[in-house]
Amino acid sequence: MIQTILVNGNIITMDEDRPRAAALAISYGRVVALGESAEMRRLAGASATVVNLDGKTVLPGLIDAHLHWEAQARALRSVNVFEAPSKAQALERVQERVAQTADGEWITGQGWAQDLWSDRAFPGKADLDAVAPNNPVYLSAKSGHAGWANTAALAAAGVTEATPDPEGGQIARDASGAATGILLETAMELVEDCLPPVTGDQLADMMQDAQALAHRAGLTMLHDFDDPSCLAALQILRERGQLGLRVVKQVNQAWLDAALASGLRRNFGDDWLRIGALKLFADGALGPKTALMFAPYEGEPDNYGMPVVDKEEMVEYVSRASACGLPSSVHAIGDKAVHDALDVFARVRAEEAARGEPASRRRHRIEHVQIIHPLDAGRLAELDVIASMQPIHATSDMATADRYWGERNAYAYNPRLQLDKGARIAFGSDAPVEPFDPLLGIHAAVTRQRDGQPAGGWYPDAKISLREALLGFTRGPAYAAEMEDRLGLLREGFLADLIVLDRDIYQVEPDEIPQLAVQGTMVDGVWRFRDFD
Image: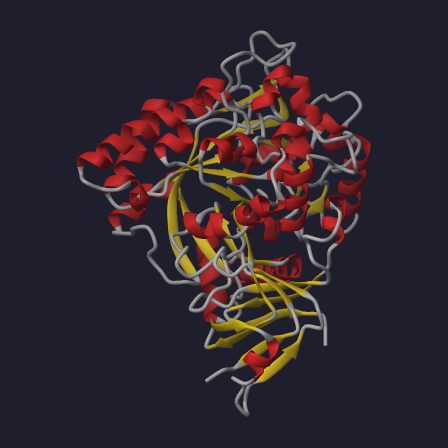
């Protein structure tokens, strides 16, 4: 029985066999026919709903291949210091929240970036103490790899001069050895572990709010990299009948033993909520200068960044996971970190081959691939490792990258290089590090510009085509999720996940892509958001 028919549309299918259609028919969450409007109308029974698109453009649902869903949901209710243009403005926003908060209650926020400030210096606990003397305050950086705490927050966490740096992290200290309030990498957990707990139901409520925004942005699926608490809240949403996004849930390093002991393997679950890959961190990030590099940061001859999990430990984790049915995704931003991750995958690929397992059975990934050594440029393709990249990072980070990496940036944030080498690509946002708006990511990929700058694009040779960018947000993530046989394009038998745009994305100027309006988002044949008659 046909339930819904869309007619008079400009349907871009992302299917080479039938690139465009005017209409499609949907039954029980699947596309069952595509063709001309009159042809599809003839399929309609008495109970079918016929939707006149009136020339609007339809695309397959867009997929975010890398974000932090719990962190994004929480960020919507915390202090918004995202890209605050100065430390003073960030502190002003904290002070506003203090006025609404009882003494002793925690205040959290996300998104500050000291490289946007005039002195580019890390802030300190005294800055926060001045506006929040009676509340513990903790603000995570835009990169997600640094935290800023006040004295009360450090005290709650028991951080003193005698507290040692945790493995894979650093407590920033002044000349006397006292903590400055800046925590890098795993040291962030010292304070984060003290934050007031949020119940699963509360987190599910937050996710419901975030999901509504995701639908308005044109997202129908996401790949999440947060902790098991995120999985628990997603299950609560599903139990309530409110889960309207498909989710691939990665397993972070700390929970690998529990996952393997329980017998979890990749793809456990269904088309709504399924297990993906083990997640490891090889290094930090560019903003706090903890991304692991072969050569030092410009102007800092002793700073090569920071490993989080060393190569031999990564081999042990990735090998164990693969033997038990889980692929791995390794966060690697610096060129040395990417190199180490590739070495790890080379060793594990050899183990898989010895077991007779094809590469397609373990869809390993490197997350970010923000800069790669020239000699490693073709190794992702050679090892059949997915390049999980975030195009918007290029236009957000370009000034910082120029400052710290210099001429090495010809090999930075470069999906063009990976596509030319034959690597598989999956695009995402890394939200809440960046907004989870795939149109912004598509724009960044095809223009390499932010607000029209720089002229011609930053390292313009790294631009990719619009079709390649769309594939990065559709078929690429579907392949990474092992769902390419039913997701990522519009074809008979595929899941009815799609979005409606007000204009043809192929007919607008590239700088107009962010202004396109998502007027409808359908997941599983159901409108999750609709803003047209």
